[in-house]
Image: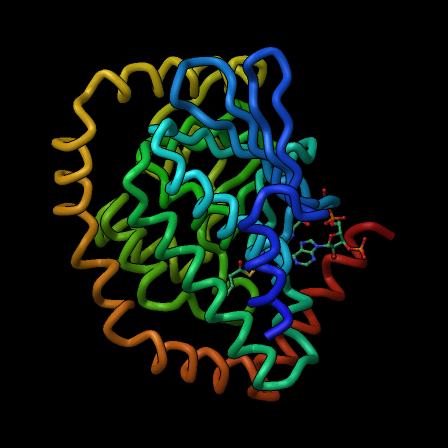
Length: 289
Ligand SMILES: CC/C=C\CC(=O)SCCNC(=O)CCNC(=O)[C@H](O)C(C)(C)COP(=O)(O)OP(=O)(O)OC[C@H]1O[C@@H](n2cnc3c(N)ncnc32)[C@H](O)[C@@H]1OP(=O)(O)O
């Protein structure tokens, strides 16, 4: 309920968290964890995740992200969005593990509902979405990129991308899997999901997880030039085509949202799964020490 109230507040410009500014023709609105700027080619917004240290998709971050997208969808002057990160070396570390560990079932259900909502909004967006993947992009980070119409990734072998859920001892839900299959085909998706493969940029390009790999300092300019090309297509025909390609995948979640929430909640609440997450979090900590 508190989040619903925050959402209403944020949707209205002038709230304390959602500021809107106009400087030299460029407009921007900023929540704490998402910055949106409209500059460069007309009709294009750049959306930057800024939830340090790793842009994990906490409940607050998911909410702000969803609201920012909703605002852009409602702004008829915006036709395309470039999705990127303000955190150096990280696109997004994916879903926030601390939202899925050591909480109660009601929290897991609320969290998952918000994950579903962001995914549905991104995947079915009428806008052109281009991701400028300027850092590591595991699991939910890869999911964000897969929702886009085109993915440009920085050529840095330290950055990896993929749905690595099985490495954490958890299972990607059917709609993550469906989108992976739609993008890279059944055989590659089956192998990558079972192994939890995190692809280097070169491997990601080869298998089709990303569409283009460019030197790190060119990720944004390339994303802008790709956007210009997509903007040349009439919106109505592109949108109808996108809808035709994506509707079945989105509908299969829409039809069973509640059951999917219950599945996730009972799965993640299991002692064995909580133990796996605990071990994974410990591994992340040890990596540092
Ligand atoms: C059912 C389907 C469910 C899930 C789908 C998911 O998205 S699950 C999330 C999967 N994500 C990952 O496996 C990524 C884990 N993180 C990493 O591999 C690295 O953190 C990363 C992103 C490569 C960045 O490495 P770096 O060395 O730069 O940072 P470091 O590992 O030291 O992390 C800094 C602190 O952030 C914490 N953290 C990292 N990832 C997450 C996360 N997904 N959720 C929550 N917190 C995360 C990490 O533990 C560090 O915390 P600290 O307190 O500073 O020790």
